[in-house]
Image (tube, helix red, strand yellow):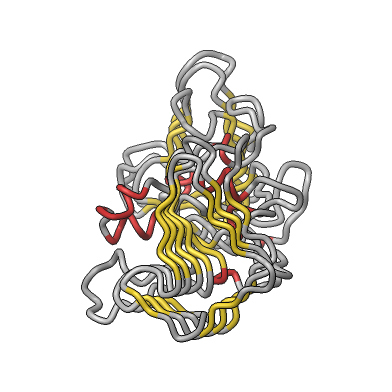
Amino acid sequence: MSGCSGLNGGGIYSSIDGTGKLTIKESCSFTNCYSSDGNGGGIYIDIDFTIQSQISVQSTTFYSCQAFNPQNINIHKGYGSGIFISGINWDSINNGINLEQVEYIKCEAYQGDKGLFVVMDELRQLCRLGNPRGQYVRSKEYTTELSDISLLMGYRGSPNQFESATSEDLKDKISELEYYIRDSGNQWHISTINSGINRLSCGLKPNPCRTINYAFLLTPLLFEGQYIPNTDIATMILLEDDMIDTVININTATIVGNNIAIQSENGGEGKTLSIDKIYKIGSNSESNTLFNVNGDGSKLGLYHLKLDNSFVTSTSPLILLTGDTTNNIDA
């Protein structure tokens, strides 16, 4: 297909349910196709996976395809320069998506992607499926930590949520798929001053969270299947000084778990770190406790940090520890 255009889906618009299937293979190509005022420069797919619907696009090239948003007033348009997928009811057992060996060349979307954009609640699970991880969404020769991460992007939420999302919600839930594909273990990197963004995919060093408190809200089971909250240690790694606005609470209700370690980069229990590499956690509030640790079994380890709420008129302790004797601080 060459030079095709449409409001949604420049080359193909497909709505799939029941046991419907869309299959494209055998060296097909989409060249200079574009979405004029919507999503999906090459292909737009709306799919319900309830009864094993399937998308299979393999060994296909998208060249110079684009998704436009000419009026720049609708924040839900201009995604998916090559392929845009809006999916519901996906599950990993019947996985109905296979986009292996698709190639995106010089594709551009108004909203930033350079190939694929997927809207789906189960986006993280899809990106962790296969061997290598992300097998069914990786483009041709895509290599984590080397390829252009803008080739593969998505919104982690339902299509209905996407269509009604505010700009803040889009910022929170849109991410490059690389950050869901890669193994993050039980570590979350924090960058308050420079590059940190509080969004669902944050945590890896190239994609740090902005605040420790936001990282505490992330569901650890969506990161690593072997991670056990409240038993395994969830480690927060500072990439720079961190000035907090609100107290950092560690308790049984902390979503990421109540066994927490906080440390400067390259620090940690049993390690040594030069003084110039030790970062500060501080507060500009006279009444702000930095850490409040409470609840049975809550644990906090602090390693290679400077703690400072240094107002001479401060009215609160740096660390407030309440609960039974199983609570402890390791510093």
